[in-house]
Length: 145
Ligand code: RTP
Ligand code: MG
Image (cartoon, rainbow, N blue to C red; front, top):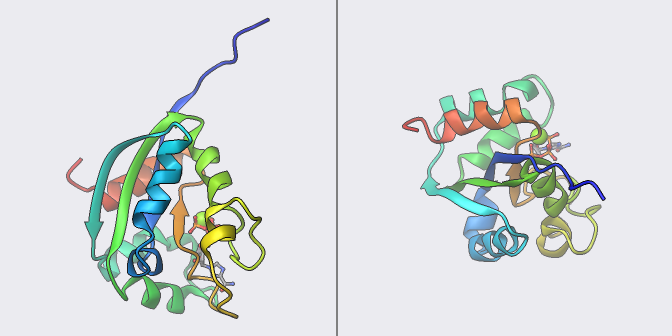
């Protein structure tokens, strides 16, 4: 049998203001660590409008952009760099579908999300979607690194 190729990656995870406010940071990080990923950096950040404009540049002009930025300004966010084999796709799988009402049981959004009607933005976490996004986003949230 061929050994499986391992791909050690890093990703940016955010526990968004709803997760911090609801006291779920520890539960979310517990799931990340239990899966076998390593926490390389953790910092509580009150995001600035500039940081959010850069982070969410791909969504500028969409109807949910302004409410999303307002929500992300509503309180502190826990910014995390996690490392591990396939952690980019792996964390997105742990997070579940974007809409917490549709996210599968067993996922962070499926188990811990609530039904907020139209407020899809309050979905507890963010995870980078590619190696390029991860490096770009780590630079936004950990500018000193
Ligand atoms: P994320 O970037 O936060 O990990 O989530 P994602 O890839 O699953 O979702 P994405 O499409 O990148 O959207 C970024 C964030 O925008 C909010 N959103 N609201 N229809 C809506 O109201 C809507 N669609 C997206 C969510 O907070 C989503 O995580
Ligand atoms: Mg995204």
